[in-house]
Length: 280
Image 1 (cartoon, one colour):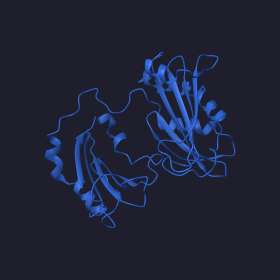
Image 2 (tube, helix red, strand yellow):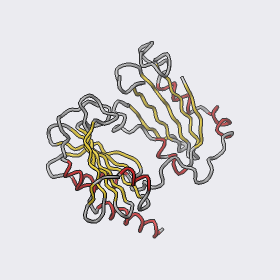
Image 3 (tube, helix red, strand yellow):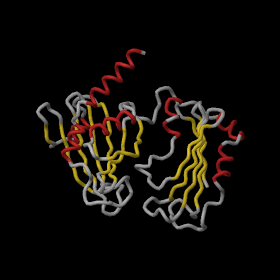
Image 4 (cartoon, one colour):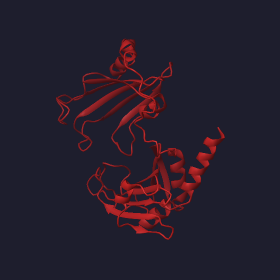
């Protein structure tokens, strides 16, 4: 068992108190509950090693208060963190018992002793700001008619959904970032890439995903515009990372992924959001 106590920046506490994203953690079984005092409680049951989902189990309860205080208690049925071999059928405490630990009032003096994070400190990247719902809406509108979309999710600057042409669901994910024009780090990433007529850099790759299962392939189109806007679109031949491929190729071709990445809908959405911010 392990426990951790920390204090998050209030502006980030809601985003950092959510269940694991199923596109990255497909074996997670998680519930989120809003407590009477406004705190959030998640109870997650996941494999110790996602490459071996039928082996060891890890259960985690996390309470996040409105002021950013967060308590997490985790347990597993393995003898140590590096092993996925179970030593018993389930972890020692039930989900209810884990919950009782994290919501206990005994944590109050511990939380009170932790200083608030310095202003401006944030583990959430500041240049990713389109909401996930807006990103998935644009993806959905860019998918050819006749394909079913489902399983929407994501976070700030990142959105994903699945598309299904009747041959199996495929994960489509988009990252939206605003960089400085001519950024040195991106110059290295896009070195040797193709250029569109307007100067947009385009990098196309087909590979086995780093977090992919057996037979999984990932097609991606990464674009960087002269004004610094970067849109990266990727697609798997499975409905989540870490899963084996369920079909030979993803449902959308590279041409369609490129069309999504170069769509003017992204710039329009960013302009709309900036205008809304200025009106406040």
